[in-house]
Length: 156
Image 1 (cartoon, rainbow, N blue to C red):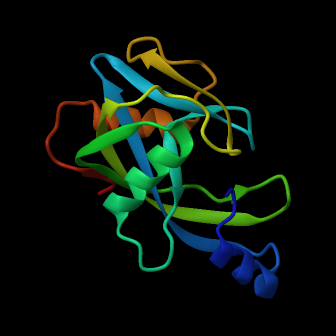
Image 2: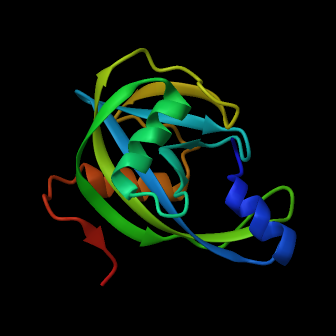
């Protein structure tokens, strides 16, 4: 589901006013490849991401999003970054800003495919030749996940 029920309930009270939401992202790797989705809302390639449900833990939420969006099974390797997005205005006028928790994940099984209505395509890309039309936030998250550091990155 593109918009979680709790967000729809909030929107019924605040309209399109800015919402501060928690999100998770996953940089999913398989050898020297990274899995990306082509988002339906903006047509750009991006890492798997989604909104945390109220009370949901970030790790299980990331695994849920991976399964829901790509149909694969993955394991979380480590927390790789924490950042805040710019304000995003969606095509329907809704405005949101996200605290994003990104995990590095490893593909375990399954064939990647479009498994929901949020994405137009799902594909593996060599980490040295990512698509030009990749979101800036995804480029940052991939860079921080694959930079070789064992520590999570955050703005200081």
